[in-house]
View 1 (cartoon, one colour):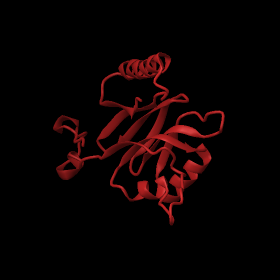
View 2: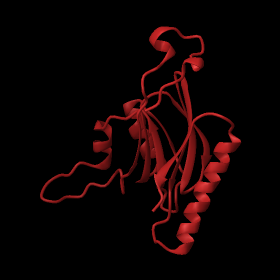
View 3: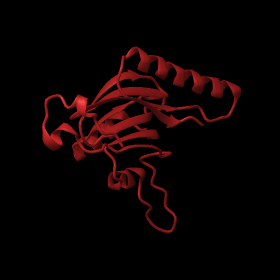
Amino acid sequence: LLRSRQHRSRGRSGEAAVPGPLRMMSINVTSLGAEPVAGGRIKTGWEILVDLPWDLVAIQEARLSPVVLANLCQAEQWSCVTSLPGEDGKVLCAMISKCGHLTQSFQGERCHEALWSNVGHTIRVANLYGPSNGTEVDLLTTGAIARASLIRAEAGGGGPSAIVGDYN
């Protein structure tokens, strides 16, 4: 949970000078669109996600096309950004914001980054999903993805940053 500092109030007075806490969540959903049947209907990842308390969620293994995800978010009046789609046309990573604005700053197949701006807050968020076969190459790939995110965060200058994800 984040709260701005008094010296960052940017001329606001009262409660507006210190906006309330923001809730960030990072989850691996295996697939937002999965709908297994086991003796009856089980909620999809999307249906569960809608009901959880969050302001920004970073998702790994979304496995939906960017267009489908954008339409789902638009129906809720949320903003979203995604990683690049894979060969199957589906994205592995996505970020969704219930409030504020997301500006994509980097987009790869297993990682993407955005600036999340709200009243009194701008946070650089990197979301990554590392390969999961457990080989040495996978471990090195995950390390390289995380290191590149750190380098981009440092190059972006001062300000809060978060690197979240499923590092496998």
